Image: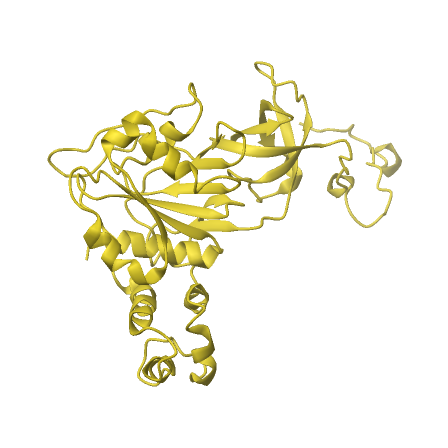
Length: 336
């Protein structure tokens, strides 16, 4: 169907105003000087729940942001209806620069990065000592991701009533990790939550772990009553947990001094995105020894200067072993 008459003149055709004369008007973005600052609590199928002035409001990403997406932990600027009332929807128009980004890939050969959480400063790696059995390779991978993102790792070992934590702690003793050991009785009485909460005060802490390790149960014990999430059980046949947490969710600590971010249970933690040269930054006692390394040294080869550095007594040999253990994680699967 013709939009104009049969005999049209150029003067009859409507022209959209173009103040600058060099680009369409649609690319001129509003400044949104009246936008309110918010904190992304969760993301669900393109809808984001954000905290604005103590109210939870629902928002969507503005078209002007293009492909840039907000994730849990992001600081954002929002316009529109900020009342938080039912069936209202605001718009996220700006995303603040992130202080840290925790990423993972599905597998080591998958180039697609998934942002787990933004602006966290601590990563709590939750591992059960039994039921299901601990997977040290998974812990290694989470450590590498934490060091690459600049997060301080915290090892949380659950279900110590089923078996001792000594074996796992011996493996990671040279990493200088902060750790907390908990059992089911302590979770029931609240003692475990109190000890873990001491490590979370004043921080934004992301909790990661494979399904069935008790991650969400632990998070539920840390937050205010009424904010608990659903939990599942470990399959008696496969020894694996069932995914009950399907999206990341930021929850405030009861005293308001800190946040915990519960993330979905994972069965793999790909490291395709990690630059191996950043891993050594988590070993400050070894960094000076790299000055004499060959160019582009992987720190896991015959001519690496770190061997001589350790032989001369500048660092503990176990520390170099720990570094190389992490550097090799991309060549090993979690179940190896």
